[in-house]
Length: 239
Image 1 (cartoon, rainbow, N blue to C red):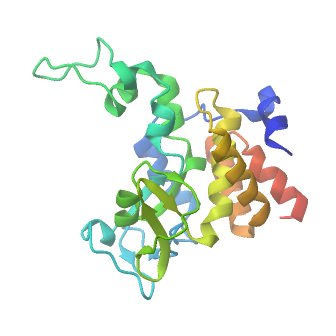
Image 2: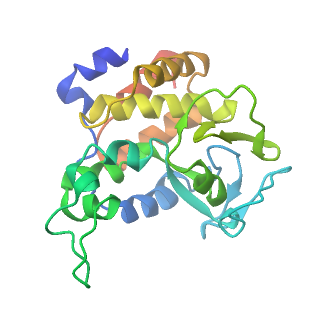
């Protein structure tokens, strides 16, 4: 199924409408989606039920060393990328005032007053386990192919340069299908033409794995909506 078909399929391409809590989503992922597949998306690091990381051989980081010890749940499509479509993120809201009477905007304001934003933020299809240091350094940067950058994490080939990130080969297919899903189900989120082209290419180059299909089925059972992008790819290969 192409992205254009998904975008026009209406009811067949619904996003998360069952859980508004980012915190609850993270707990459900840890307990119900990843109990028997505790590996991070970028570096393949293992982690336990208390979120402690066992780094893979050759992994290293010179920054965010404390965060390198814990798994964090990464928005593959960064929250800011879709959050800035909300006026509360950009400009604030009269309800977004702290205890000292000071107005605030950004993520905290969008989360406080906008239900649609909370559903998007808590969508488990867009949340993946990552080493905290990798999540921190990736920040809200868009993915691309970098011509000269070297890995920032030793043997884990995650490259970051000039506010852009190049993920390891093994993560690219999952990333692509996550971006495509988010655009298909949330009118507020739109990729640039350049991003659409890259994600379409990665989707074709790096097919679904059995685990990616299992993950999507588990999330569907909890969250209620189907990830049609992944489901169509899984059906095509018999997973």
